[in-house]
Structures are given as C-alpha cells and as structure tokens.
Image (cartoon, rainbow, N blue to C red; front, top):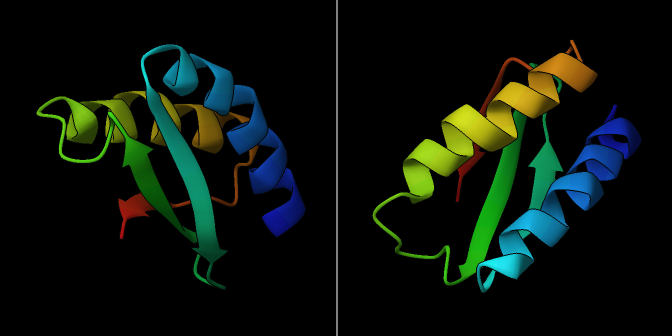
Length: 73
C-alpha cells in the first residue's frame, strides 16, 4: 500500500510545488492512516488543512481505497 500512496503523492507534488509548497510521505500504518509532512509555503499556510483534507486525502482515498485518513505531522 505504501508504494501506491507514494505514486499518488508524486501526482500531487507538482500542484503543491507550483504554489511554493511540497509534501513528503512520512509513513503509512496498518490501519490505513497516511502521515505526511507539508513543506515550503504549505507549512503554516491557513489553507493547508483544507488542502490536506479536500485535496490530498480525497485523492488518496479515491486512488487507494485502503486509505482511511491523512494526517499532517
């Protein structure tokens, strides 16, 4: 599952980089919780939580059904 998640993260990364941010996959646990680290302009951005839930989490759940949630660390 981690490899599938990493592939989706690679798809998302250019969109975040276009706005001066980035995303790093920290880990995936056996319960389907994906942990990511937002970097650059995304780190501390007021819209980061919305990007995480409505963008990253939605896309990951769509592409990798085993994903239950996404958390920023």
